[in-house]
Structure formats: structure tokens, C-alpha cells
Amino acid sequence: MNKQYILTIGVAGSRWGRLESMICKSHPHWIDSSSWMEYNMDNPKNNTGHMHAFWGPYNRLGEQFDQLELLGAEQFRHQMDKEFDATDPAPYRFIRCHWFSYQLEWLAKNCPDMWLLFVFREPEMSLRWWHESGSWDISYPNYKWYGTSEVLERQVHVENKYMHKFIKDRGLKFDYSLKDIDKWTAKHMPELEPGVDFGPLAQADGLDSTLWPILYKGNKNVKD
Image 1: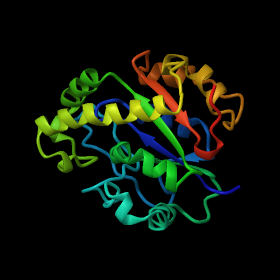
Image 2: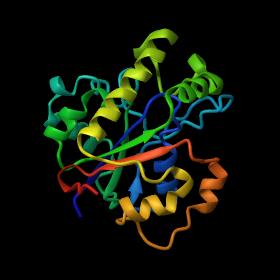
Image 3: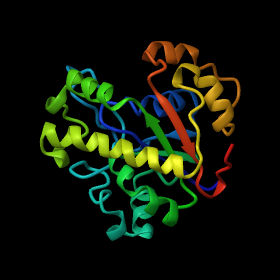
Image 4: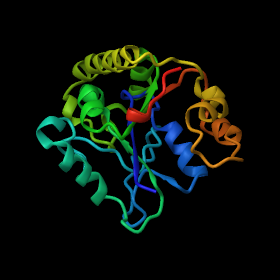
């Protein structure tokens, strides 16, 4: 099977990586980092749980991912391809980057085969969690691009607005929160291997009705 990239999009503090984390833990054909490279992780004294691959400015991966129009679609794909083990048979690959939210129309036009996975959480709740879980002491990923708390807090609202506009313009709907992850994956990710019970993972990760995923499958997307 050809590689299927899933571009994960969420704001700082939204716990946007929880869904992909549970999928990768339970499904070996879905990955978010290369098997040949030791992954990064945040300082364990923080409460983020950040690990594996984050992409974007000031991080090891995706330095130009805030300027995809300048980078170009071919180079964008090349950078992702080269970071994964070429012999890894896993066809589903998550790419997590805050800066995708500013470039959604570009992505839809230039990378129509890629899926966009949005994870929404109320902005004020996200910001509160970001500050409580480590704020500027978070070492991974690097938030230098935002500069100050005032800018980060403003941009979280901007990013959230761009995400909402994209899904509204395409008629996508909120149906299940991650509290009902089994129902959500059955409806939106039937490609997942059957027979996996997400219940224990969801309970362990403390997921609840504050997290709302939306999946846009690009040129394969089917509106409800």
C-alpha cells in the first residue's frame, strides 16, 4: 500500500496528540515517528507527556513548515518521506504540526491525497492546560516561534478560527468526542484493524468529552 500521511492539527494545550497516540499504541500499521531514530520527549517534570515527532519551526523536523507555499509540495513530501524508515511497512503515518492550521487551503489544494486530522478543545481550556503543564519550561516541542505568552494566546484563537472555518466550509460535522472513541473510529477510520478495544487506553489517558476530532480525507472525503 502507498504511504498515507495524516496531518494532525490542534492548538497548544489541546491534548491534540492523544488520539494518534492511542491509535499508534494499538495498531502497528499506524506510526508517528521512525523506528530507526530515537524519539524526543519533553522534560518528565512537566505534565505534557510530549514525545515522538513534532514538526515545525525551531524543532528538528519541519523547520519551514510555517511556509509551505515557499517550500513547495514536492519538497514538503520529500521531507516527510526521508524521516521515516524506508523499509517500515507501516502505511499510515501521522505528522503533527501546529502550523498546518494557517495553511489548510494550501494543503487541501496541493496535497489532496493527505488526510487532515483536527482535534478541537476549547481555546481557554487549552491555554490553561498549556500553562499548567509546563508553559515556557516545556522543552519539547519548541514554542519559540510564538515569542511571548500574549502572542501564543492570541494565535491559539486565530488557529482555532482557521480550523473551524475549514471544516465549516466543507460541511464537516462534530459527532463524537473522544469519550466515544470506538464510535468515532468505527465511523471515520474504518481502515483501522478490527478488534481493538480503546476503552482501557482512553481511561488511562483521562480522555473525556472536551476533545473533539474531525477527519478530512482530502480527495477521498465523503460528506455526511
